[in-house]
Image 1 (cartoon, rainbow, N blue to C red):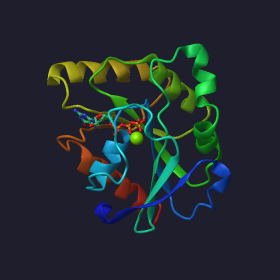
Image 2: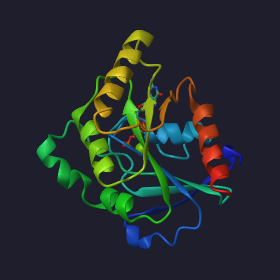
Image 3: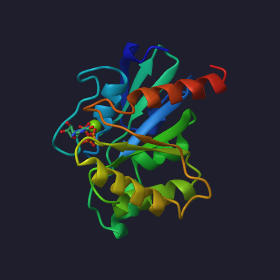
Image 4: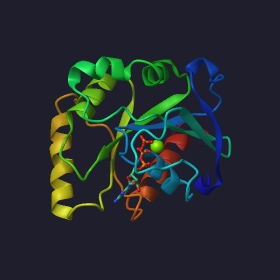
Length: 200
Ligand code: GTP
Ligand code: MG
C-alpha cells in the first residue's frame, strides 16, 4: 500500500450520507489545532490534501481520503478546546458521536494528543468516553518537536499515567511530529500490519 497515492474522496456533513463501508476506516480525532490534518498530510506525503490552519476549527466536516481504495483515512472535526466538562456531552453529540458510534467501517480512531502541553481534561474525558462506549482507540502524540525532549517526555508520561486508570491494557501509542516526520513511518507500518491481519 502506497500512502502517497492517497486522494481526497469526499466530505460528509452527516453520517447518513456515508455509504456502506467497503474498506476499513482509520479515523483521526483530537482537540481543534492538535495537528490532525497535518498528520494526515505527513502520512500521505501531501502538502495540503487535508487543509491545515493556525486557526482552530478548520475541519468542520467528516473528510474521507482513500488510499488505493484499500484504506480510508477519516479526518474528523476537532472537539473544541478548553471546554468545561459540563459542556462535554453537547460537544460529543452530533457528527462526531454519530460517526464514532454509527460507522460500520471504523477500524480504529486515533486520538491525537498534543505532546507540547500537559494532559488536558477534555482529552482524558474523551478517551474515557470512548472506553465506556467501546470505541477502539489508539493514541497519537503530535508536535513532539515543539518543546525540549525532556518536557515532551514528561507530558507524554503524565498522559499515559492518567489514561492508565481507564484501561487494563493501554491502547497502542505513537509519538509523532508532522514537522520532523518522527514516528510517521512507524504509524504507517502499523496500519499496514492491521490490514494484513484483516487479510486485506
Ligand atoms: P482543526 O482542523 O482546526 O481541528 O485543526 P487540526 O487538528 O487539523 O490541526 P492542523 O493540522 O491544521 O495544525 C494546527 C497547527 O499546528 C498548524 O499551525 C500546524 O502547522 C501546527 N502543527 C501541526 N503539526 C505540528 C507538528 O508536528 N509540530 C509543530 N511544531 N507544529 C505542528
Ligand atoms: Mg484539520
